[in-house]
Length: 533
Ligand SMILES: Cc1cc2nc3c(=O)[nH]c(=O)nc-3n(C[C@H](O)[C@H](O)[C@H](O)COP(=O)(O)OP(=O)(O)OC[C@H]3O[C@@H](n4cnc5c(N)ncnc54)[C@H](O)[C@@H]3O)c2cc1C
Image 1 (cartoon, rainbow, N blue to C red):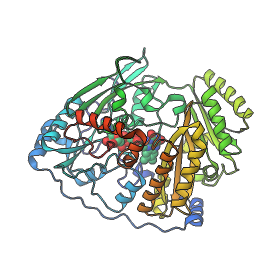
Image 2 (image 1 turned 90 degrees about the horizontal axis):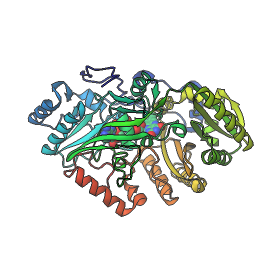
Image 3 (image 1 turned 180 degrees about the vertical axis):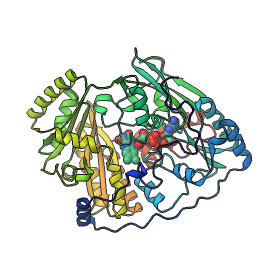
Image 4 (image 1 turned 30 degrees about the vertical axis):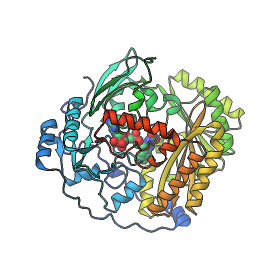
């Protein structure tokens, strides 16, 4: 082991960097809606200050003392936690419905016990106890899940264990020749980056949830970061992984590429804790970039901007960051929540291009991209919009809380499709949301690009109840399926998208998933009800 910042391993009842139980992120980050934004929101939706959070009390843990004693033997007394505050922090994820339920004091999904193992051997011991006593086990990384992946079925189980992986927070190995690093699953994004930085390296995975999500969670949900054009999706970075399942261990990935049958790493990537617990991942790493430049461009229409993106994705050069807001999102300037309706509202569509790498590479790419985008009708906006985007890139989720505080529901959903179907998918999903939630604000951006297509990321703001939102999301997901787009590009399946999975992968595909589950987890203790229909 090398490079750990916590060789003593955390032993307190929490493991630091805990999020607020009913809001996004750092409890200190909570802020009321800025005045100009509040005025806009009032105009669009009216404002009702939401009721104060309900006082909560949790049901007593359902586990008997003998089971708790076995768990204590497996991981140590200090790491079997049943107190209410910690169980509350391990209840569900951070989707808007999750936040609304947390605000309403609904803790029906709370685990009975939080167990904090260290190492594959302790994970295996906990799974063995869970099999013996038929306990549901929910692997827990950062807790930022947005599709119900942390809210399993508890029906028929003797209890629910939150398997908190945050003590598995080491950089295990760096291979500077192959440019890979092996990381434990409980490292949060910033912790992993800090450890890699000691070796002059970066992973380059910066989803909007970066500050609170974990390496294991990135792998288990096939996450995609804001710089995916340059660094790739998380699943594309993984060259090897280890996992513990109730029936055995998996250690996969002995070479950068292989023809030794189907790639079994892909069975664990995106498996959302339903097939096994990912105990390490070996990822491709890059040198810390010498230079970073982010810029803004303006295109007359969303379609023109998308055509330009496609050109970059297919003919290159590709910037490290490439995203394009539609007209509505540009007008609202979500890039900088403190300046809603501000600087970016000069019409058209805002594109952000970012370049990271050696100074020479950055300059060369910037020159070529500038020439190409100019030819394709783009108007350069200089570095100011890019700087504003970079400064605000992790702030938007705090704005969601501020909107919930004044009674406006804000939530996101996402999809991906081939370039030839983007226009139709965009129109259909937008129409489905608009028809379900009259008066809603529906914003969209292209968040990730590929040679063959791109993802579309929608943000919806409406005065709506949770059931109304669920109906709108169902209509939007139906529209995605009808348009032959995916039901999720990077948020994963969880429980929320599961009803649509068979329509994407077919009944035979579902049978394959069930067969894998039956082989690795025959008694169904791992995240029951998540992912596998
Ligand atoms: C405000 C906000 C912004 C977001 N932005 C992005 C974004 O830009 N890009 C993106 O891809 N996603 C985004 N997400 C979704 C979420 O952050 C990702 O899905 C993330 O990868 C989850 O990581 P986590 O560590 O929080 O996992 P958790 O929430 O702890 O778990 C997610 C799922 O993975 C399982 N799991 C976790 N760790 C393991 C493990 N070691 N082994 C097996 N199973 C495991 C859990 O059981 C659960 O089913 C966002 C979410 C929020 C709330």
